[in-house]
Length: 477
Image (cartoon, rainbow, N blue to C red; front, side, top):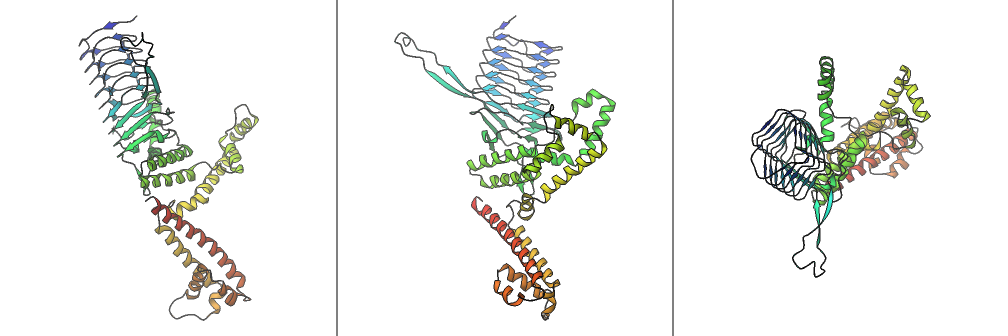
């Protein structure tokens, strides 16, 4: 049954002790729910608001459902508190929707929501782990009303395309240690515009969302090792130090009150480093379009770091082994059954644990990406490869001195590694005449030639990385 009201202040400061059901209601005038209190769930399914809707200062203690609601005028959700989920699935806002100062503790579902003008989330407070689902709706084609006489003259009606899906998040305030805004895996439409301004990006998760469709202005990005990072990388690193405490607290809550523990447990899953690397690539592209090359270089370094931390499944052998370790087979395949049977024994679990540790260790500490990280910080440091070059030269000088070459030549009076240092510098200078005259046909020829060959290879790698670091610094810096 549908209900219809005109202009009134009936629900100002109203208290709804149980659930409030306004599903299908038609409000032909302005609606005033200022300072109302909904102690139970509030249902506004497919409600029609022809005028302005005012919910400023209202409190929703239960779930708030505005699915399919149509707001023709301005909407004010200023300083509204949503203690549970706020579901606006498929709602349509024809004018400005103001959520300034609103408090969100649980989820915020904006799936298929249309903001014809602007959805303004200015200085909202995030008091829990809030999930924001907002893929946008895309474009909508409308037909403008015809003037008198145009229809008789055969003039076709004018059509206009309205871009829908403008959303702004500005100066979000995060209350509490674990307050997080989860924007992960939002499949945003082509013409959707999401604007994030002056927010703490440590608390915003972007994994799996196309960041090229997001505009960032004056945000506070967390830094790790001198580079800007996203919250998807920062939050797991911060919580890793407290993981044992979180697990212990979770078990105590589970033992004391199972439902409370299951409801308030940490809902962050293990990060997908591969998806985060894609996020870094999109951020680098986004900031280069805005000519912020310094931040783009930081996100490029983050791309390499996520590739280093990701699963070692690039090669053919690595893919097969990692697929067997993680049991990434179809459930109906015979390999899935074999892997399950193998993992149930203590020997199988030990073998899988050792294989996983070895593969991750080789990928993170012995691969080319790892060398690039420890030598130049992914091109972010010019001093580090120079220090590595000097250290390597001193080390090879000691190796030359330990061979027979260092003991045959007369010792100088001013330094122990004189001969080794001279030999190392000659190799760096690619002095082939030195090898032909002083080393050829000598008992120590094989030893010195092998050390010199290794030094040439390592020096070439370090010099190349130094050149790349200088190029990256001055190309866009």
